[in-house]
Image (cartoon, rainbow, N blue to C red; front, side):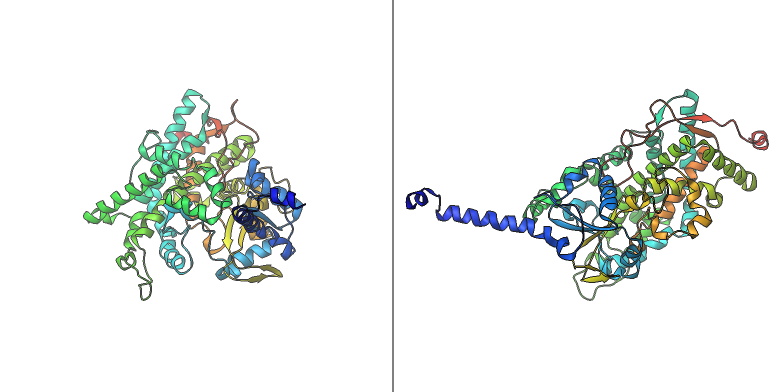
Length: 515
């Protein structure tokens, strides 16, 4: 026996390595008991990865499967990080609104979101309240009306491109066109820059905007599964979720526009998002050292960070929603006919399709909302619990990341019978009044919901109204059904949204004679 022990590698080095391995194993697996201790069901995690490997078909597919199997409250893991999923509508109301002070922050992704530094998306607590209070008036009705002419000009550009497609009877990826439109709108309304990427797809703005959304998901996954020391290496190595050359391009562009406006008083008279942010710039916040700082306005980092977020958030999700609504109408021609009738009525009564006109278009609004139900801009969103909190009998420990599965809720047959079908009537006034408002969360929920949603809806509805005033969307040989969403948290479609447009044949006579 002693001879066998002599053969075992029991040197201090081997003992130390064994202890290190044991400690690391305990470090990795200890959180895996979190939900068992709380009595919360959920899928079993895998060492190192947690449940991330189950995202292969998309996090939204994983969410729907778990939502059906484990109920509306369950736990899962990204790496070793416990993630509490809450799909119960009453609990969502408590977490995002009634007890918002305990859940006011989003998950901290550190260096992965370095490009958004200072923006509403990442800042926390009192800084968030200050910036939100400063930024929110930017999207008031009066400010949106002032921007409408710029949006209308871009919508006219969109119609001219669709006219070219119709004349050639060509199949095309509508998402490419709506992306250019959305970029032109935000460049014009936010920064006073006329990119005209609709007619110039190689414009630097268009090239870099596309590049930004080629997100390296592997970096994000590595970030969440590796222990903190490796995250430090990520930061020092300059790793980011978004391509740095693209984010730096937009940061440089924003700084150049700011310098131009600061040196030219006439430029500072513009009424756009950037100027409204610059008007709130408070230099004392650029040098804040802690106590006694002024609690109003924005620092220059916050001006640039929020400009970045508005520019890019208004680009992709808006473009996707326009294309997806057109896709739904192409497959539902009766609904498309109703929108066209509504367009004709509004044009007859008002003479044009402007801000007030699209706000009168009730059925178009229903179609857009039904599209956002099927394809929400964010498939899930999160909040972090700041202190131990009891929410209607559910105990949530401090530090827990709480996720809201918007996509799964939007596809719950108990809330939405036949959830995969496009039924705009779900958003009639009567239907909405009879339904829990938390069953529909395309822009998040509570005070941390998207502040730019009113501008996004204006862009979407004005583009569709102007297009349907002239054309009908129809399917083609390259149209996929069903569509496949990309494996990310947005509503991007794999392979694009391929359609054709035809000239309208049902334009009322009085409009044809006045054209």
